[in-house]
Amino acid sequence: MQPTIPTPTPSPAQPPASTTPKTLQTPFWPRPSVRATTMVVAFTAIMLIVNSVAAAFGNPVTALLIGPALGVLTLWLYAATVRRLEKRSVTELARPNAARRVLIGTLGGLTLSCVAIGIIAAAGGYQIIGWGSLTGALTIVGMMCTVAVAEEVLFRGVIFPLVQQRWGTWIALAASSLLFGLIHLVNPGATLWGALAIAVEAGLMLGAAYVATGSLWLPIGLHLGWNITTAGIFGTVVSGGDAQEALVQAVTHGPIWLTGGSFGPEGSLISVAACSVVTVILLVSAHRNGRITARPRRR
Image (cartoon, rainbow, N blue to C red):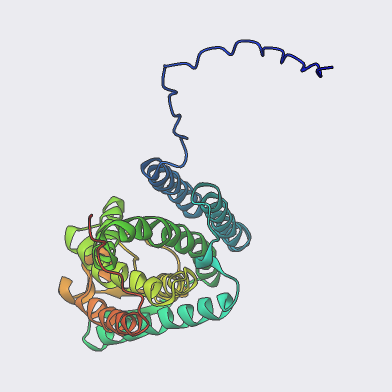
């Protein structure tokens, strides 16, 4: 007797494959141009807002409480934005050596300011005429905590790396420094020469500090120390801004190349020379440690 072989049940007909190609949806946020634009616009707005708030501080208690708090908030927003948009760890704000670098930077900025003002005074361009206000000096300390952090986050944390990734370290230094100088043209006593001077002395030096360490802490400290000493202790105008009460009352007189004129000592060739020496030292260190990157080759 022959075994009965079951007849396979025919499977239901499969629908014909669609000949229409599927459209690939490119995610919005991962686009590099969108991320870059978002970062620049957002932190430019943050810098302008917090700097405006800082300028309104009227007493040392408010300044010393709110100023550092705004600085911390700015750093937190920066770190959160980098993690969200760039999907990476924020190594430039790494905690190891953070306090040490801020302290070294602050002392370095203080020393540079003392050297520059000292030479200007020795040449007859700066003179103390009396004691000023301790409360005014403390208010400046709080205000500069906000200013230093906000400006370093924008120019060294956001703009510099974006340019460096595309065109290399040298162009990033030049571009971020030039933008740093130009933004100070909005200050009441700003001059074109002053903007150029601060681009060279401060923009390049702070950018070099970032390159040499790969960290924002050293440039924040340098920026903070210079501003506190120049405005809060020596009582001079910073970057053409409004005059503030300081620890001493002082006057400047003499040629613009010596005193910086209405822009303040940052417009002085003395300051440009002093800060340029530090810039060279930092860039030499960065080069020796392999931190200078060339412009990527296009394929």
